[in-house]
Image: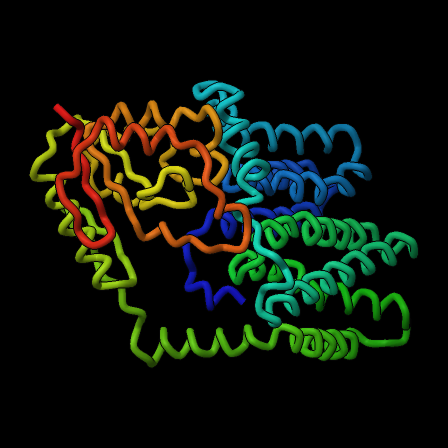
Length: 390
């Protein structure tokens, strides 16, 4: 299910890797070492993506409930040790800044400008949502049956952790209803469905064999997978492309012995020309601001530019632009723009048309600063290069 994403380095995948390995150690809930490792892995998952904290703590709850006090303490020690880097960052940045950056603005304030309507999406994505809900229901049913039948406690704890992780990652799906967010929510609960079905079958029929349970589980999962049959097609196309076909082509923007891949040759050429001009006229240590051309709508920006010109200092707190964050009322964005020596503004985001509140325009202060404090040095395609007025 992850093949069509082409193994993109999303922090979410690293966090899920930690969560699934933690389930392995949660299955050994009656050992100090197992729970300490689970606590450490849960902390690492939170370091990758703080919004995985709920899934991590939920999945640990059954094991901690049944464990003795010493084993619970070892889990907490592992969790605390793993969270030390986050604690250090919060201390250096300030608790309020940490809260705003990691949760308040990306999860709460920017959400209305990122969420996509479910029933305006392609039909196959709606089916994948159904696949997620059915998978969660099966995993949760297996966990409840195992606990009520007083099945082997280790299996019950493991199934409970699986069910709670499945539910805990679902916010990713509902946060933004598109291909990547849905697949990243579906593949974890779906991967555990065969185990859940096999356990339920073994509990319902004592005379069944392990082999028959496995066959039945695989057949059930194959039937369930038909809901997401497009994944098979996408996977086949990408596997063929990666193995025997022509590999995906990217076009490099190369500046200062650094490069960044873009899909469009025209886009790569435009950035190369604009950044070479910026390097030619700017001086090391000067400040650079990168954003959309219309700063009343801060839906996206070309963050990679900061990497390509390391001799220039980023002029803004908002390295990444998000709606209702940089452009909110009384934002510091106008002050940040005013502090810059150079602006690189992109008109490519002028026609942003997502069916949500990202279409709204907000604070005009940053646009006014551009008009009064800067002069346009040149334009390359949709890219405007501005210099501070002398």
